[in-house]
Length: 195
Image (cartoon, rainbow, N blue to C red):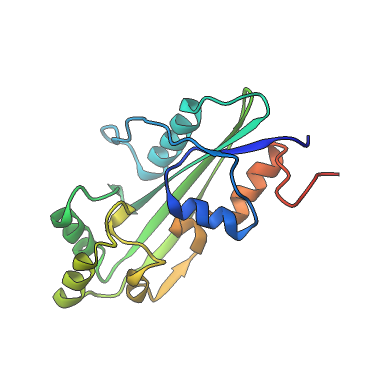
């Protein structure tokens, strides 16, 4: 199985950093260009699984390449909170999340040849009640840009999160334990050459 090369189908610098934590540097980064709009009535978990599958299907790969794609969303009940379009929407998201628990769902898809391995991880996150000065300072930082739900747990908004139940790396954007398992299932030597 040696000689397989990993292609990351994502432009997320956070996913690159997370893979580096377990000693993986992708051979190539090829973010797919797909429509990420939710469908009418689509539930958050169905949505992220569909997007991860669409992403991995859209990445062209050679026979010796393993492709990894992922998608993360924030959900309050049935409501999908993707990346805010602007500061006003980010503010709406933060006020909606303030003082409540929500779910962060990350779905992963790994492709090798015609085979696809998939999984998802759901983490429950509590956000403290936010004051207007806290929201305004966070918005001014710009850290909300490009982040599902309008915040990043690994940045300044970490001070807003007193409690999580699940995968911290899943909230950041790539649950490492589960991703490593999918890569190993696809024959990629995560921990060195496979015996």
